[in-house]
Length: 433
Image (cartoon, rainbow, N blue to C red; front, side):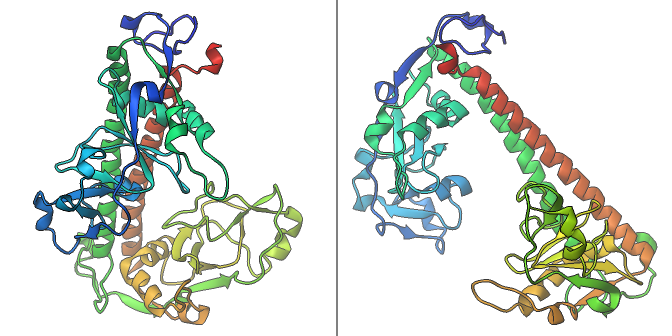
């Protein structure tokens, strides 16, 4: 690709065969038709119990935003009876059309309809855009999904308690077009290739996570068992695993109670929001306590690197291990530190395992928000082998976690690359005068 000399409405990055000829502005109404006909709520039915009938032509997909996210044909997919509606005359979706959420928290979100094996129709919160033959729907999808495209859509969204975008305002949204459909398609093909790579890498990540889940089910004994299904060869002749209550194996500090005073900067406060399924997410929520308050806030016991954390409610049962020095812990968090018999690393993975998580939920109280009492939590049983086998299990799962983290970072890098590429492949009207 070349970086053309900036003259008029041109992108920063351009395929060399298309020279420096200026792009043009157009309204969506100039290049497409807007469809808002849909099947009313209540006119669909769920066929999740009858997978056979989904292979007939009597039913059509009913498209909601959740269906596009989860994939067509998932267990909660809704369907309409074709013979009962004449939606095929106007709002039939066959694949390639653009769909925009027109109301609610996701207003303005853009999706491209996948190719389908049967017709589909819109849910009430969706607008369909059908493009003319000289305009690439793939190109417009990426344009509207770009940062500038989302800004253009945002200007057409009406305010109020329930933000929405209507058909009339959507028609006036401005798009920028190359001079030829070939250039449109070249840009779309480039971004599609990156999306396919991201999808492939995401599938690899999902495979690693599934492998880890299956491995954990075999590395720890199931309920009622004293030995795991899978054991490292050097421990085959070792005795059965031991079992003790959590409070016999650890010291603990229960930080539940009054929330500490927060400040703009200072010592990072790990709250229940930060504790995920196996790690601390320092980006999802950033709260701090003053260094002057630290001793008082942590007077029950200061956390150390390696300590294991559990959330006791909202959410229940998320586990993490402290991986940095000098942090504070908030309410709804209990900290464990291994004593004799087990290691912190092993404890973390055991508490992430299926048997322990199942016991947590079985012993939880509350309907809307589930929680567990400390006196119940501390009596939950922990099964454990000798120290060497514990370390072998922990090392195995730690290595797998490292692969998962590296794979997730690879996907983030690809997404960042795609975002930067989109900023250069589409002209910014304001920057071009």
